[in-house]
Image (tube, rainbow, N blue to C red):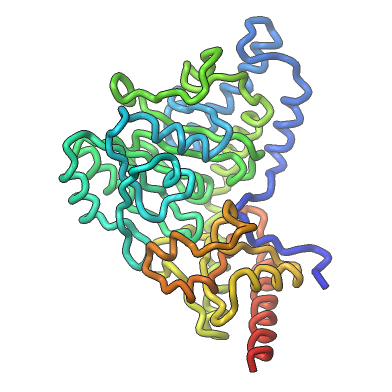
Length: 376
């Protein structure tokens, strides 16, 4: 029997829509007006879009003019990897999201260590071996393990070799303070539904330095919206919700850090109870994410059993759920395939309670106990 109030622990897949975002979407839906129209109704819609642009830029310490609204993080990543002339090398960490690694053939993977942190020495060697300027794409926080990458160091290396740096910050935004300039990025991808906004809207932040031979090549051409970088009438309700979520997430950053204490308690209790391994444990991680094993129990079985107990978690990235395949991320970290098959991802969110964390631990211990009894 599931619990009356399910415990949702899959916030890295998508998090609850914040009340502020819901209100902003409803307000925008009540308006009639195309942001490109010059009459009063059009100008009202345009104001909503530009206010949201300001809020999204402020969340990551960027200039509003650099924000290009997209349909989500996947489109932002696809757009980012199209700034180089054809056949120019693209170097991506081996633990990037599928929406980076699958964009085109010939992407060179930068190896990572056992905690999933990019190998800076290997990156330097790869950059030194390239004749033409490259694009380096390294995420800020991993969606499966929560491990943080040394993006500022990666950016410094990339720029030393004349390369551009793109950072997929979809999982990190709203969960940690981000300063676009300090990181030294040229491009950064964001998504609304990961920070409590609606799904179907995201952004690519592009510095004014990405121009000339290294300019963004639009995937959608038409009316010249978003300064010619992304055609199509703007999704005003989605963008307004994104802006409201960005404001709320920025204000809630210090509060979000409390999740780290609950995450630590979860990991400590499970490791005491079983020989559970936490991936990326030796590296800095997001406060809300834990990728851990239940020894001897397949991830798919855990997800189903925990769901029956009223707890929602995922086996690796939610994008690949429905087809539970070996995790590329854990494989890149050198994890044995059989062990990786027992890993689940637990991710807390802005509306997670301490009670949720305790209920998850109880359910996990119960599922593990049943598996042990069954095995005996």
